[in-house]
Image (cartoon, rainbow, N blue to C red; front, side, top):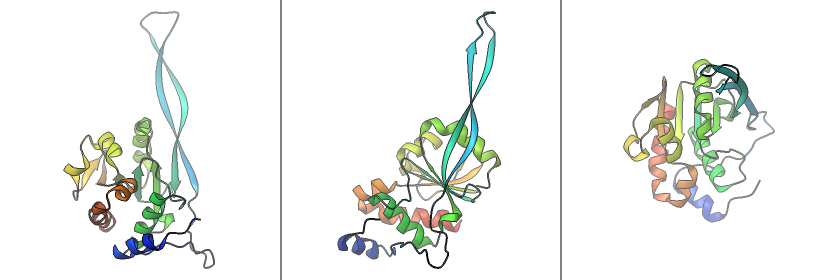
Length: 191
């Protein structure tokens, strides 16, 4: 794992966010395990023999999840990772650690718009009670509104309580939004 520069440590310290350092000696679960949830995409193809009739073809598809698929809290964002090998994943890890969240208490989805049906199917049977959408693309895909209109407010995505905030990439480009993102995460965590 790459180390943070002194300047990066100072920035995180100024935000009051401790850096999450992997602890493998005391048995604390700090490693994200890949998990997957199977679902279906449905497609309809014309039947050659009888015009106007439709047949249903089911093809297996997988919703790629990280963390604990039985967790009650879910993070969704484009290219989300807790690998700690990029600046945005280190920032996200630091913020989650500052909340006191452990990796086995989260399920994470690196968002792609094509996952909408699979996500809906997953949420019907999952234990997820709270979702945090990170970034403008996933917020617009799921809630059809901008982050700026939904900040600090609980929303409903399908039937799940949902909050929105900035993606770690956005926070690295616009550090002035870190305080708002920190407040969003606290609202989500303490709800």
